[in-house]
Amino acid sequence: MAAKTIKTTKIARLTKMGTTLAKATGKLFVKKTFNRSVKEAKDLKIKIDVAKDIVQSMGELKGAFMKMGQMLSISDDLILPPEISDLFKELQKDAPPMPRSDLDKVFLKSFGKIPEGLFKSFERKPIAAASIGQVHKAVLPSGENVAVKVQYPNILKATQNDFKNIDQIKKFFSLVFPDVVDVTTLVQEMKRSLLQECDYVKERNEILIFQKSFEKEFPEIQVPKT
Image (cartoon, rainbow, N blue to C red; front, side, top):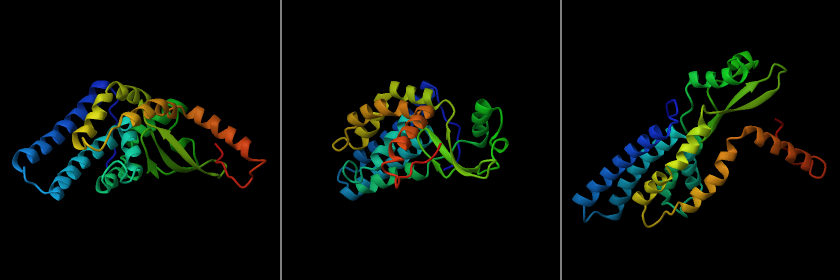
């Protein structure tokens, strides 16, 4: 997927999701109106087409919308048909990264330098892009290989706005899979955990706690240094 600047305002995110929802509704309406005797395979094909639109929008918006897709992707066929679940798995490995200019803005805001001014080498293409950030390979001036986790600009604000638009998340899935998916419990779990995930300092402190807990009693367990 191509890199795109993430929309962060409540209205912009609601508009993006609303447009996708309207497009999905139109496709399903055509199916119900003109194909009343359509076979189950045809029905699934249309839902797969709709799901592709939803996955693309989730990948572009990041935040809670994308996190929901990732949570659904690990359910295999327990919640969604496997053909649909496979589409959401794309959000685990093929989400669009932030544009190069946005990456530089994050580093300039935090360090006053672009990545090349901090590292001996820095791979611009991320090895992974997820719901709140992306990961890059880099080498410290000391020569040590590291993974650099970079948070998307204003993603905390975007995620907070997603929870204000929470009904849109539920509409997505009740529209396409009214008899299968109830995302209420998933939304509750996201509200509990996702905002905490945006706190990278807290994450680092928790990693240090695990290091100290395991290093003596379980030396075979390797906890990454930060």
